[in-house]
Length: 555
Image (tube, rainbow, N blue to C red; front, side, top):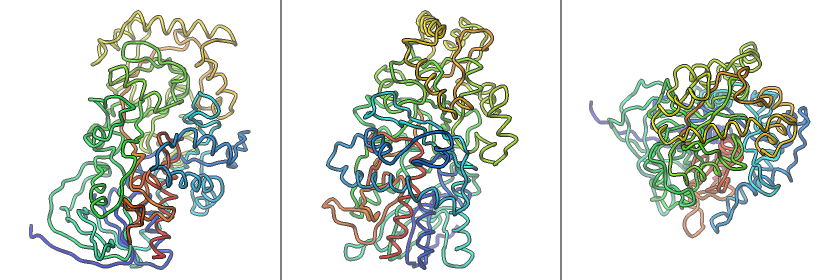
C-alpha cells in the first residue's frame, strides 16, 4: 500500500471522540467554528468508552431524589465530595476549584441541559459508594446515582447525532484511524497535531484494531483539545503509576476498558509543555469477573452489588467494617492489596443474587439500554437472576453454584487461587453471620447497614434483599464469586484552569491547548482527588467537554 500524507486546517481540533470529545466538538460547532475530530480507532468506536458504560450520572437534589423522599442539598453534596476526595496536595488547587464548579453544575444546570437534549433517567436512584464512616468521611450520604434511560448509548446519542449532523452540513470533519504522535508548536503555541494514518479496519466496537501505518497527516488548528481518555487499558502504565498507599500492584488484573484506552497522548501532551499531575491517583474496582464472552483482551465486567453478600479475602476471612459491597471501593482495594492476594470472594444466596446483582456496562443491561419496559419489569422485579447474570452463573469461570456449604467451598478451592482458602474459616464466618439475623437488632454492622438501606424505597424495591440466613435452604442454592481487580479510570491527568486551558509547569496556560474528560482527570488534573463518588465520570466528561469546547471556540 502506498503511503500518503494529508494536511487539513480548521478552527478547532479535537483529539478523541469519546463523550468529552463529542461534547467539546458540539459546543465549538454551535459557536460557529469549523471542527476536526481525529481518533486512532475505526469509526465503529464513535462515542468511545462512554458507550460501554452503565450511564450513571451524579445529580444533587433532583426530582427523582425528591420523589423517593431523599433530602439532598448542595451543602451535603459538597461535604460528601470533599470528604471523599481528601485533597491534600499543592497540585489540588485547580482540582478543588473544578470540584466546586462541578457541584454547582450537578445541582443546577446539568439535568435540565440533558433533558433538553432528550436524555431521560430511570426513576429509581441508586446508592453507590455508601461510605460507612462518619459524616465527614468518604461516601455518598444519600442516593445520587441516576441511571440514564438507554445507559451509555443513551447518553452518547444526542452528542453523536449532533456531530453527524454537523458533519453532513460540512461544518465538522471526522477522521478515523488518525493517531496523533506530536502536537505542533509555533512560537510556543500549540497550532494543531500530526501523526500516523492507520490502515482501515473493520473491527467491531471495542475489538482491538491493527496498528499498521499507511500514511501521515497534519491538522493545523487555532485551538486543540486533548480528549483522549485515560490509561486503564494499559496494564503496564497502570502498574507504573500505582500508588504506594495501595501496596504492590496486582500481578493479575482484568480490564474494564477497551485496549485503546492506552494513555498514549500523555507523553505527547507533556512534550508540548503541558503539566501532568496526580498520575498516582486512579480508580479501579475490586468486584471484577472475567467476561465469559469477551470483546477486548482481558475483558472484565464489574458486579454492581447490593449490600448483602458476604465479602471474604482469599483465605476466607471476612473483610472489616465498613468494607461491605458497594461502600468504599478504594478502601476495599487498599485492604485487599495488603493481604498479598490478587483475588477475593463474594458468598451469597440465590435470593441475594436475583435482587442485588447488576452487571456494569450497556451490553449487560439490555432492558435499560434498549429502553424495554416489559423486559425491565420482568428482569428487575421477576423471580430469578436477570438473564445476563444467569449467563455468568452458567458460563463464567469465576462463579460457583452449589446446594451445600461444603460443596460450595470445594468448588471454590478447585478454582485457581482457591487452595489459599481455609474451609473452616469460611464456615465460621458464614455461620456466625447467619446467627445475627435471628433478631431485628444486631452487632453485625453489615446486617445493620442493609436493614438501614431497605429504609430507602429504591433499595427496598429493586436493590436490597430482605435479610435472611445465607444457609437457609429456602434461599438457595449457594453462590460464590471469585473477584478480581478491574482496571477502569485515571483520576489524574493534564492540569487545567477553569477554562480547560492546559497549564505548563509554571502555571501559565499553554497557548492554543485545552484538555477535557479523563485526559484532564475529568477537570483540573484531578477533580475527584483520591476517591470518586460514582456517577461523576460521565458527568465530568460532559462538564469539562462543554467548558473546553466553549473556551476553544472563544480563542
